[in-house]
Amino acid sequence: MGFLSPEVKSMSPETIKVEEVMTKDVVTVKLGDPISKAISKLREHGFHELPVVNDKGELIGYISYRTLIRRKSLSLYSRVEHIMVKPPTLSRDSTIGEAVKLMLDTGYRSLPVVERNELVGIISRTDIIKLVPKMKSIAKIPVEDIMSSDPEVVEEDSPVEYAVDIMRKLSEMSVPVVDENRRLSGIVHMKDIAQGLWREKDRPSLGEVAGEKEKKIIYVKELMNPPVYVKEDACLKDAVEEMVEYHSHICVVVDSDMHPIGVISQKDVIEAIMRETKQEGVFVQITGLDIEDSEPYMTIYDMVEDFLGKINRFKEFKPQLLTFHVEEHHISGKEIKYSVRARLTTDRKLFYAKSYDWNLYRAFRDVLDILERNVKKEREKLMEFRKETL
Image (tube, rainbow, N blue to C red):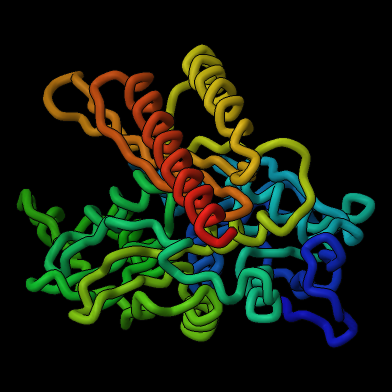
């Protein structure tokens, strides 16, 4: 991963160039390589995405865990070009602010840096979050203002497939692990599951060869890593330093009894950095909604536009980012219940809301109404405080 060069003095995302932070010695796979080789490199180096290049070193595509986990079945002997995608790119002169925005826009955890079609570097979330301890404006933010509360967890004795389902549902690559008392005991990462899981899929077990129906079950406790965590009174700098030191893409926030009360992901940190960039309008992102029809998105964005119009009237709380994550719960048959989590980032405070409903639009309307009420309450508190201090 890249490190900040000593020449960089300003810690503003708008003044740091991608070239100063990016990794120049890029690990790649080539056209014609088998998927098994890509998975081995992803796991060996702790990456989530790898560039695919031709013999001239030109960028052809990207292969990632995100693509892999969406496949219910996969042959490790297939070639990488069968599942690669075309990624967005950056130039050497792009700023960290531009890199952060593109990562949030596209959902990629790393982005290739290209010059004259040649791959010259790669910049990852990890490269960027290493800047946080020197960004005074966000380093001291309390973790409770950044974390996602009520985190999804997996038990030690659960099959790894259950952990993969959670990762797929949350669009994340790591999940906290708890013991029988719901205390944090570890973290399981996609990179640790991937090779064994797909090997099991691709090669029949001894029992299957012999005609038995049961196959070997791999449990989370067999693959989990030691926990990466901070206490609830920590700040963002503390969480980032833990993530970097232990090469983890999440940091769990625990209470005094080691019960998980929240999770901070690299994406959460990237969003915090996004707050420091100059941008026009409000950045809006919806993840987890797997619908090809554009009409639901248009309806939701109409609702969001109406909501932001109301919030913009509160000059004390200027909206900057509004993110949603949707989960589908298949209750029975074809019935689907939706859960929607929302986070509104303003220049003063972060606001959270969540809702469950059989109707997707009602779930979105509910979280927007909750956010609006919470902003109004905070504004009333601020107005009252100002009156008392006059």
